[in-house]
Image (cartoon, rainbow, N blue to C red; front, side, top):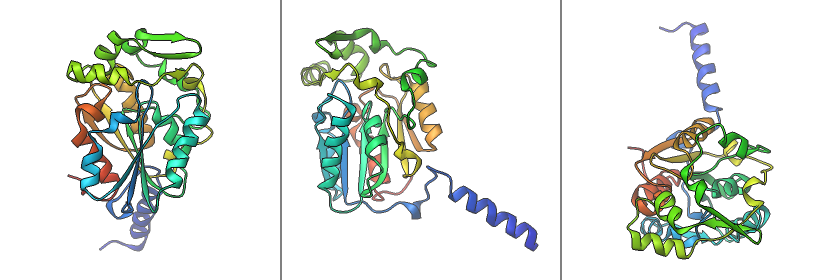
Length: 258
């Protein structure tokens, strides 16, 4: 039988563990009604088109944000407008640069969980470029084209380094609809980090050539996120839509952990 001192110590360990940010137990996950999907750079809302049917078949209301990519403030405002239209608990999902957006917008009281898909996840006020520079430079960086205050990926880099595991005709269609980001967008710092307060999930793309996979692993570990890895390019939401949908359903309390 445990003596009182040992029993009190055990209770203290359990209480401390339950207070850790990002540590999620099944009973802690609210059942969400809605999902808001946020795209990143070199993309638009159509990048979620294969994920959406899985979520809708599970009974979720789904909204894909169309980010202007003109400034972080503009992108966060677009996401907050989408959240304002939701009725009840909502999972907020960000791909790539949209991890920055959901980190800033995710403290909305309607947000029940955050899902990062091969995404940035800056801390509040962090110089993310300096953090990323500690990891190998991803090949896609060499394909960035700039003009008139905006930037995008050239076709070669897009097909090879952004969407390398997508059938070429599909990848070219994604290339045709890619958004152009304002030059200042990637360096704008967030003022908050919603992942410090919300249950968080993260998907690492092991074949990513746009964000280094080791950086993704670092971010997921720092957030103490529930994490999966997929043998995928940067656009895992296109090449592995079911797996991404299943991760979102876990965060929505609609699916049990395997």
